[in-house]
Image 1 (cartoon, rainbow, N blue to C red):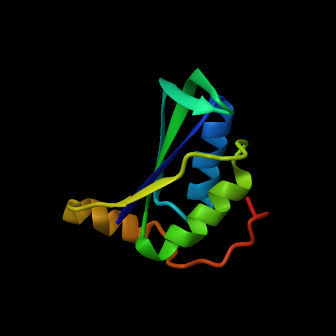
Image 2: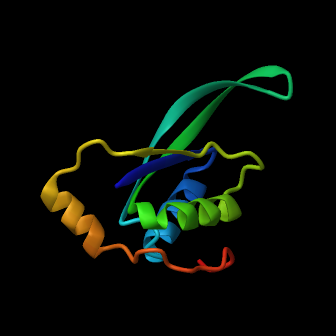
Length: 112
């Protein structure tokens, strides 16, 4: 199983990304938390911003399609996008993820 995440400035954008990825079955689950405080350099300046983090849980077969979908629908020009492989996943939860994901779907980025 993969766990991926991104951040947005607006809660509505985070909710839209979470709901859309799950509706498309690219992710079995998406969670929104925040606001979190982010510190980063942008265009030569140290910035501080409140952001909302979106966590996605997906099958490895959906990882590339989820990445394309999120980047297409994300409001940022350069979104944070980090994907890690889960080292250990509960058997029942993994079975649920598998039952609620469509492996390797082909979705045009413009689909919801």
